Structure formats: structure tokens, C-alpha cells
Length: 164
Image (cartoon, rainbow, N blue to C red):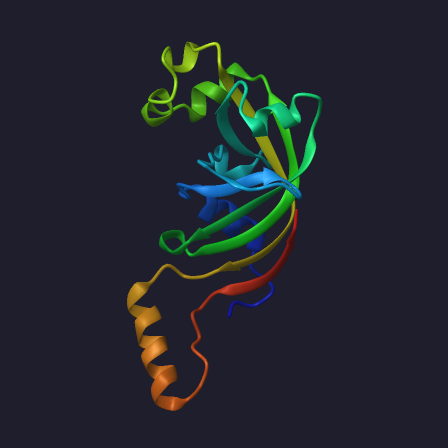
């Protein structure tokens, strides 16, 4: 495990930059699969999402920001997290330009200009997270060593609570 002097928030944002999917929802409701997008190493403190007008998630925040939850489980990036924060509807054409992808365009008939395109931001407040070194060789070595020595594997990561 890493010592307490490293910047776990920076590691969180770094891992989140390449996360391709997560589960997102209003706290207490069902979670749905979404694609998170991070700008500038998370310096704005937000995780961005594109959705469509009329979806349940977007309808629930039209009247204002709501308490929300995001769950990430991505071995490739070495991050597992249950994150609580605030989900809000946004209207920022510059952000939309920065995060837009051709994959998003497949969901909208008129691409980024489709009148149903909606932007949302999730601002994390706290997270229970595990962030590990992304090294599959080390992972399998540690598992094998643990089995042979009857000890716990050291996956070279960090686990705990993050407050943003």
C-alpha cells in the first residue's frame, strides 16, 4: 500500500480519465450505465455526462441539482469506487465540444446539434475507493504468492475514503 503522503485525489482523477463506463443515478434510485468524461485532469472537479432530453435521469435534475451516486469498477484503470455527490443539468457548449465523441453521435440523429442533447455534471463529494497499480503481471504474482504462503496479496494500491 502507498504511504499517506501521495495525492490520492490526483490518482482518482487520473484513473477516471480513461474509465469508459460507470453506473450513475439519483441517490436512492436505480443506477444506469453511462460514459463519464473528465476535463483537464479533473481540475474543474466535475465528471461530465451526455444524455438525452426526456430520460429519467435528466428529468430528475431539470428542477435543480440532486444528490447522486456513481459506481465505477474498472480493472483496466485499476479503480473501484462508490462515489457520492451532486448531479446537475448544465448548458455549456464549450464543455460539450470538448467531451463530444463519434460514439455519442450514434445516439443522436443530428449529432451534437440534436435538440435532445443534454449535458450533466457530477460533482463528487466523497468516495469509498480502491486504486491499484495497473500491472497484471504483479497481480497474478501476488495472488500466486499469497496462495503458496497463506498470506494476503499486496496489490500495490490504496484503499479508503476520499473527500473532495
